[in-house]
Amino acid sequence: MPETALVREQLRRSLVIARKDIRIYYSKGPVIIFGVLFPVFLFLSFTIGRDLSVDFMIPGLVGMILFFTATSISPIVVPWEAQARTLERLMSCPVRIETIILGDILASFAFGVGISVIPIMLGLFLGVIVSSPLSFTLAVILAAFCFASLGNVFSIPPTNMPSTVNMISSVVKFPVVFISGIFIPLDQLPAWGQAIAYISPLTYFTDIARGCIQGRGHLPLAVDFAVLIAFTVLFVLVAMKLHQRTMPRRI
Amino acid sequence: MRPMNNDIAIQVVNLTKYYGELLAVDHISFTVRRRELFGFLGPNGAGKTTTVRMLTGVIKADEGGASISGYRAGSLKAKQVAGVVPEIANAYADLSGWNNLMLMSELYGIPASEARQRGASLLQDMGLFPRKNEPVKAYSKGMKQRLILCMALASDPEVLFLDEPTSGLDVQSARLIKDLLHSLNARGKTIFLTTHDMDEANQLCDRVAIINKGRIVAIDAPEKLRMATSGRHSVEVSFNDTVDPERLARLPGVNTVQKIGDKYRLYTQNPGNLVVELVHHSCTVGLKIVSLNVLAPSLEDAFVALTEKEAEHA
Image (cartoon, rainbow over all chains, first blue to last red; front, side, top):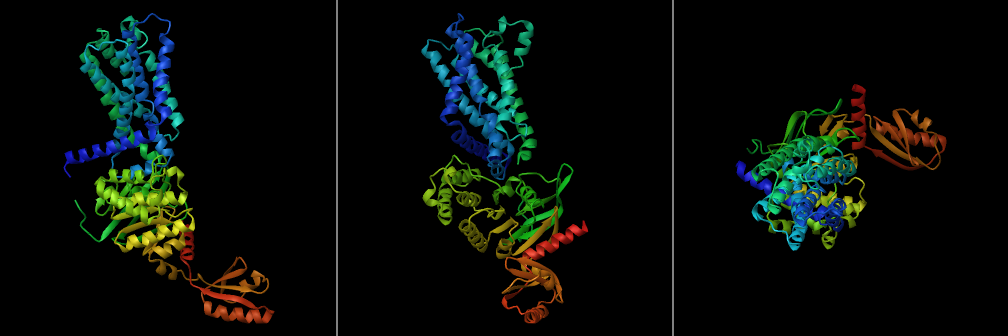
């Protein structure tokens, strides 16, 4: 089979895996409710009482919800499947490990994009104006894919205990939220704070969102997109490469 | 490229797997012919499951290799022509039996109409059709295992790998699976069956390989393996009263005596003579023989003898 036909076939099978993940792991009521409520309450706890405009709050809220939802289930799908003894079955099918990983990322991506529509609609309802809808939409799509890939990176350690993976991901996720310009804009951070902020992919999405909604981003839009793309490629490659090594050790 | 030799379904050459320091599979080589029902026997921890996992591409071999229908084991093409029932595998508990089956068909790239038709037929054959829309978590263990077999057959594979498919199942489910394996083999499928159930191997397999401590100790037809086990013929006898096994062990030609329930199994190289000795002994001590059977060595006897011999060599 020519390589392009093979790639197309594997992509189709990734979509099959993504659909399976959505049916099994993402369509549960508590997952959806938790995916929305948790970031909303976390956000409110840091913004209530402060004199902040809706234009400032909505980019942060969208960023947080997108980040938390896209990284909520993807870290635990592989350990879950290993624990439930469905992974060996999946690995013996004519799919590459990269196909399985891409399927898991796509499911998480779809969940992140779907849920992020809620705060976006809320923002529009509250009168927020998105000056560049195309850039904003592209940023949501790119960031969802980036965060979903990051979530998948968390599941690389070959443990079959979802709780262990959850712990690892929480250790990374919570600090990331606080250093990404969600609660304090980048230009108000000291130099060392900005230096730390630049290592977070969420920073670049928040900056794009602020640029599109508040009309002033800290970095040029092209830089934000370029770095977000670089992070996405890095996470996807790391996830695919390292899962190749660790996935057989889960069996 | 498709295989050169169309008569070989599975070819294993020097296949080796280490887990750290442990040599789990030790340079094994064998061939399975097309349309053969091949048994892979061994005690727990012998390397059966590791071998199947290497053949089905779930784990990689450290040395050597294998081919399935001429394709390198683990390649997409090899996986495409194989169906697998892993040792401890589950269907997706939250999906219905039907959706599990359709998921498998999609992962093998089977066209939807063909998948639906074959899926319905498989579920009918396995007695699962009336409950096809129920989530798998509502299925019994036997039903789940039958569903997993259906999932392995969803792509109509050329070669079917089954790792302990009837282990822990109720009699009905086990029989249903064995009957299906028989009929699949009759329809030309190559079947690679790992088991530690000697009866199952004896009933089903054309040939068996016995693996112990990662090494193949014998490959042959079950009947030939049984007959090659000298000194494992036995006479099973029961009396109308209790007997001291030590006295039976002292009878001429007896190698060992085993008490099995209310019967005694006496192993010998010459069962004919032993029958005469037993009749004479019972007359002498005033016992009445209730039952007396001459038994050829079972596959289990062959298995024990071969694995013990291997242990002595080690």
